Length: 243
Image (cartoon, rainbow, N blue to C red; front, side, top):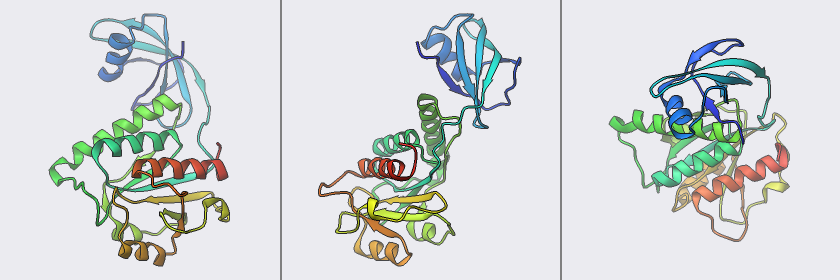
């Protein structure tokens, strides 16, 4: 049986005994039905992971003792950023989850002319917490020990004005070069831009290309936005990362 992994927001050290937070307790004890003496893996995003043994497993509280540390690194040598236009909520969640599994380091939601989702200010904090929860869960599942970051949504124009040293690529359904024809990024940093359900407008495409962003094609078939994001990240990791 695979040892369950959990992200925990606190300092960890060998021989430390800690009470599990409510969410981890609920999953480990009430869902997985773990018993005293069984093991879980904890990580806090600071690198590596800790093997812990359950020393207490009660209805409302549980505790573990940390017994070993593994300085394992499952991060890709390619630093990837995904700038994804806002799409429908469930599709956005899916894209974020799979992007994390594919090794993305940062995610920037974008408002574009054809974005059909616009988060109200009074709901932004809740939405950000929701996305961060998806990121944590994807890291737990995929074995990652570092958490990608996600920024609050911003406009395409504002994002283009931000300084960057990454090679920036935009996926377009046009006759642009294939990604395999590009020169590998010397600093191992890639920013991938993906449009919304209806695609970028002609004006936005001109704006992107004028900002020295390379257009790349993704074959003869039309992909959904969430599919394009994962396909693009997969290609980047296959060519220049660790796939």
